[in-house]
Length: 408
Image (cartoon, rainbow, N blue to C red; front, side, top):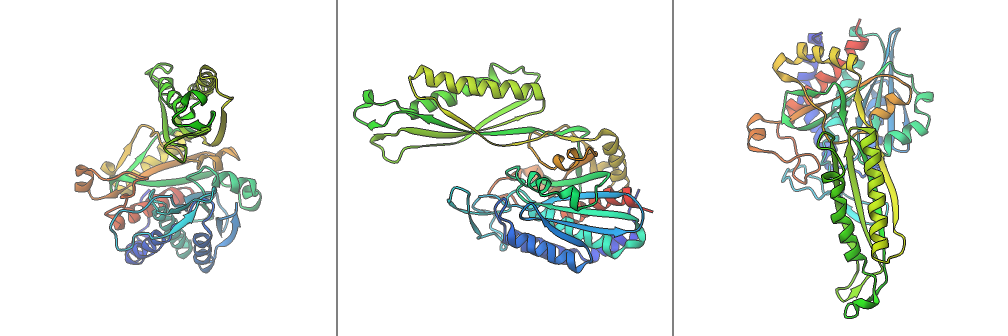
């Protein structure tokens, strides 16, 4: 189903203003679950367009537009930034700063494209409001905080989202990534990995650096743990199964000649299969505790920080949507792709009420840039360099999904 000409003409006429709105959001990112100004701006724009809005989950915004009898369909966009020092060189680059939950002052950047997602969703909402003659039913927009920490969808659900908003028959969402602008990638079935993040506190005994025999060195012990944990993937997981285990932070000590009494490191794991996930989590705990015993150290602490569910695109809904995308964007612009190892919490919205969902990716860069190599999401240099085309494609894809369910 190709979109009505009125929709695409209106979109094209508003594209310059859309790029400006995107740049405004890019300049002012906020950390996960702290998106107060972002939520206020989103809510204000949707109120002006006649949506019923309410704040949900602290800094989330829910907007509903009722347009007669028909299905209820939901569309989700995430809104949080990341603790990254931007290094794009853009004249609209972020200089914002924020405070992490532990009190650390950090730079903040929209380094994952959520500024693009907000802008696409707002334009999609505007077009539906201004072209009610082309569809019937109810559209529900979910502007979700805290995607990066997997806190936002859960917070909105705990705040009674589906008791306060109309329950949809399907949920849609999408994500910009470093591919060619104008293209869309969709996975059927498993689309994104489950994720688990753990914090390990290694206990030791403090001593002077010149007297290591008086210590239980948590740095050396932690290093053994880090090294041994690599074998969870290389020696305990079949090559047929996907598992990624990353240790990206390790903190210990304050002075070069003091052996500290503890070290802290974090683990992030990605997997597609529940059994693989369970075995890996058990192996992590076994290795951490066994290394502490081998060193004669106190019991370590293993704290679950957060986790992401598997993102599973309903096959029937997704295959139908792929055909609609190809009609709207062109056969060559749409690729059925394997799942990616990144993670998302968008699936919580559908899973909570037992309805299907589809989540896809759209490109943000010129073809020549992609061929030469562009920074990926979560890089301080991540910035779509063909944002006009990216926004236009994102809006057309969102409208195709929504109007395909709601269209008269």
